[in-house]
Length: 156
Image (spheres, rainbow, N blue to C red):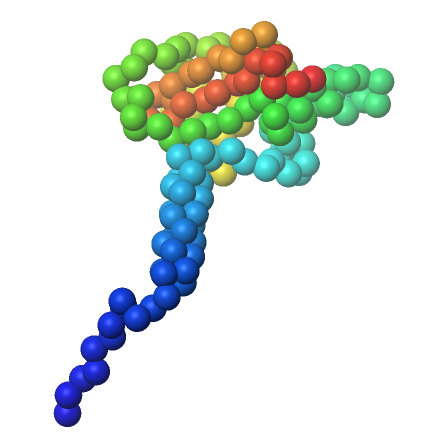
């Protein structure tokens, strides 16, 4: 039994072009998702981070309806804070996250993270600027993960 071979030259040029274009679009989208780990943080996650740092003072300092701190923190998570895996910047000098003091005024039990876990990392544990004028970049330990805190030019 002879197998029938497919002759791709018979496939119209338009269909081949659409296939190639679709492949390119999907590839670029996938690679962008791998490099840029911008998250859409839920209100529950943001609240958990706030409570971890502010403990018993969270209601008074953050969740109080007169305070704008909750709005600033939420905006920080949604628009300013971003973690990217960027091995192409290996060897480049950035401030290390470990050089940033802990934000442990209300929770003395806070400790510097031993390793980075994207699903549970709390940037509020560190005295990172919530509203910097210019973008700040920090390296997480000796990893290829960089924290970007985008400056005022991003809004607010």
